[in-house]
Amino acid sequence: MHFLVLRRVFPPALLAMNHHGIASMGLAIPSRYLDVRDLADLRGVDPNKYTKGLGCHEMALCAEGEDVVTLAAAAARRAIERWGGPLSDLGLIAVGTETAKDMSRPLSAFVAEDLGLDGHVRSYEVKHACYGGTLALRQALEWRASGASGPKAALVIASDVALYAPKDPGEPTQGAGAVAMIVAEPRIAEVDLRSEAYAKPVFDFWRPVGESFPKVDGPLSLECYNLGAERTFAALAGDRPVADLVGEFEALCFHVPFPKMVKKAVMHLGAANGWDEPTTAGLFETKVMPTMEDNRRVGNAYTASLWISVARALRGLQAGQRIAAYSYGSGFGAELLTLTAGKDAAAAAWAADLEADLAARRRLSADDYQAWRGA
Ligand code: CAA
Image (cartoon, rainbow, N blue to C red; front, top):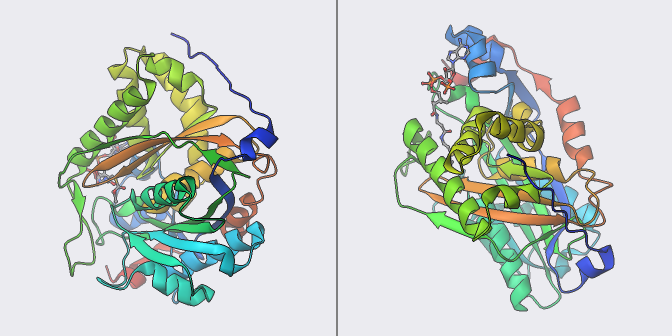
């Protein structure tokens, strides 16, 4: 079994005409972190369970004064600065999150207030668990493509703080972070208008009103995540073998609850398509694993997780090279997107954000963490 390498390389000038996508990007993570081996010591668990069993390394944690809004605003400021346009050129701000601060007031209003963004702008929050950021991006893209935007650009942000109850089995998968994107001309990447969605109403992960921590049916979430991947890849491949579709991409990005969950989905995709195990494992190692380098240091940032992986995968690509992005949100909704690198991908200006934040953050001890969580 071989994956055909079918690269479609477009000249940059052609990419910019009547195409829409990511013009600029900014990322932000909080200033504290815990090594999962310290959490393992605290909870009396073999650290290999977290590092090898789940594939996690570190989890980003908020310090006093940091939250979903400060992360979103920090990422947005970085994206806006690189974009270079005035705030008045933004006609839409949409924030995907499952860390809502209010049942009525959208998170976008908190962020817009912080940025000083008001006037002729559509402002709203999108909720669909970890899928909300992708939905916000799709809406912005389709708003641009419809012509309703006029010349205006959109500011799309995926921002979350993922915390489980202390001692919950999901505790080693915690994390936090934000990715902001200016949706306009595809300087960094064109997001192809065609995508494939798949949804099924289930309770695999949910947080009832008034509760601080989610409830999770872990095995069901894994089953739904795998099903979404199988169905969306098959739908996008159409009459072609899925292996041919996969062969078009330099990288395959996934929503990353924890890296082992992604590996299981890739192995499931291989089994569903009759690939032999070494081939699928090779695909995972070469095209998927490298995209999760930053996720392993940030943890699950819910809506931002997929886009942290996409930001990593786009680094250094030449214009015309393509990647795929599989979005999953519990409840459940899934969507497979494809992106084509633009002329600014090679320079990867946004890479400086995580490099700076990772270098500056402070490692908490197990005692610090226990004192903070109260357990
Ligand atoms: N050394 C190496 N590996 C070990 C080990 C050791 N000492 N001990 C255990 N392991 C391995 C296990 O074999 C297992 O690996 P496999 O699955 O490959 O067999 C792995 O470590 C985990 O072990 P368990 O399944 O026993 O772990 P657990 O019961 O404590 O569950 C969990 C941990 C898998 C994280 C579980 O809590 C879970 O499923 N959590 C939720 C998953 C999730 O995030 N779902 C949502 C997905 S989508 C999302 O992000 C939500 C959204 O839309 C907002």
